[in-house]
Image (cartoon, rainbow, N blue to C red; front, side, top):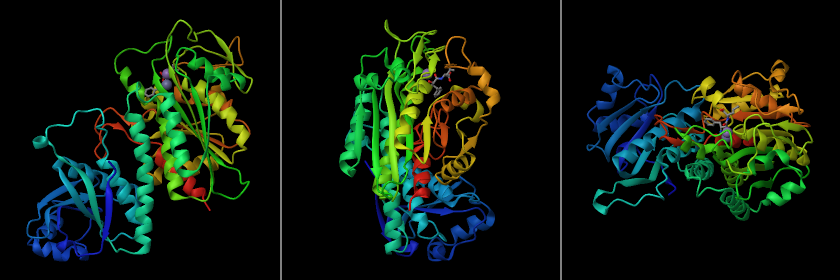
Length: 492
Ligand code: BES
Ligand code: MN
Ligand code: ZN
């Protein structure tokens, strides 16, 4: 259930709430807005700050009994030394919502002293991120044992037009993240190519976007031999979905967002080991990010032309599945030798990138849980960023930073091309273990012609197997925010 928000312009000492969260950066003195609250608490806040019991470090929290004020509890949450205020506010607010959720308070209030109206957007996004859960498939516990999920939050701020707009933007972005994370967390038997396509048509209907869905037959007609060879082992109909949002200048070249949508990746004939294979339900997070971003972009009513595009299928071994050594002809016409059927994402993306040319894009950004090598290189902290156009790469990196989804660039030099040369075809689909993220991107580059292009390898950042401080384990919503910030940066 989505969080609901209210804005309230009142003294923090008088807010009647079971939990008041206070977001503070490193080294704060007691903000003037908290003086009355501090007095009611007998100077406890001042003492905590001057003694250094609370320094405002990132993810630091300190809990007070607030009964002497209107609040049942007061929770200080540290923001660190923000270099990117939107990112640190999102993280702090998310941590606050997680704590509130654990306490079972149902409602809470939050204040970020010294911030402007812009902060409200980030706080709303962060709170929604922290409160998110996927409980559809669990039997609810008996009433007596049930904790109240966090449902309503009051943001203590001036209730102006600008504040309301900022909150609405936060809610729009939060709704986008909800779409992406929900789809990602759904198991592979429920989140099918059909469901992803249906989600796209549903978003399209609500926001009046033109949505086109190609199935196996249509893709055969388009000669998408690369995408189709991945779908060869499954009876499910693969889907190539395009969503057209055109609220920018008439005829202006669109931004094209592309997502890998493997509803499950067994590896195919080059089958994966059983251990932790269940996480391969997350192999559609690129597509989920496209859907989430389109939802958010439409809600934000950004004045810009954007095409969302994804390829959805399931990589399965079977008697008719593609085999190592097979050669297929891609939509662009280049022949590909399949060395490893588990390098399927790049095969799907190759045909999408080639198909994208028809939109005459101003820029194409793809996102894919593409390589285990990216997890080894950058861990779960940074998305791998590679591309053909340095200004575009820089623009994407700064959008990612704003969205608290940091990226890190890896090189895409011609030297690596040797590694994907084939003896029998134009190119082969794997380049060995060394530089796995780069050779995967080198492969994609062969199909990203006629436009500036950036690739996001989100294998390490789209989901987490362990609890993160501000976000519970499971899907993170990456790259929804990066897409949204990039598009917003280009909007008129
Ligand atoms: N979906 C996987 C990549 C992946 C691995 C995502 C771990 C998330 C976590 C991709 O399709 C894959 O299997 N890649 C192979 C490529 C290899 C065969 C060249 C890999 O990374 O091992
Ligand atoms: Mn794979
Ligand atoms: Zn995969």
